[in-house]
Length: 150
Image (cartoon, rainbow, N blue to C red):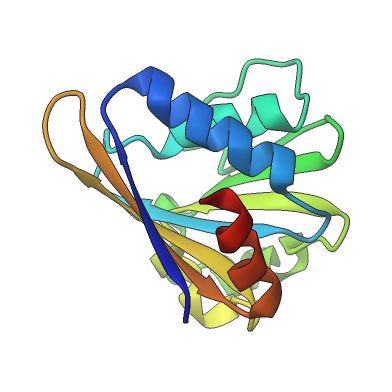
């Protein structure tokens, strides 16, 4: 399993990392984001949206659970925090769209629904401004993705 760690020293660096991910993302791309509240999951997703040419402002889908944004590739932004134990009943396994980029915050609440291949990212707060983004590739296309990202 290929891994990559990126240390961001500012919100601007986090946004730039996300933008690089968005520019490289492909239809069917799945990114799982886990980390504490305020760790920078949505900030990274905003950058991904920029890389996908999303024109709308990206906000946390905590209360909506899912937000869909149109860009070069459709961006599905899901927050699974409030969905523990309810996900199969809601049909979220259908949201792994082969034509979209899907970002799932708090993905561990739906781990039993995940496909075999995806990019996992754990975000850790180092200080007020600094974050550690640790990526692990699950599958060959995501290993190749991480090689290009570095």
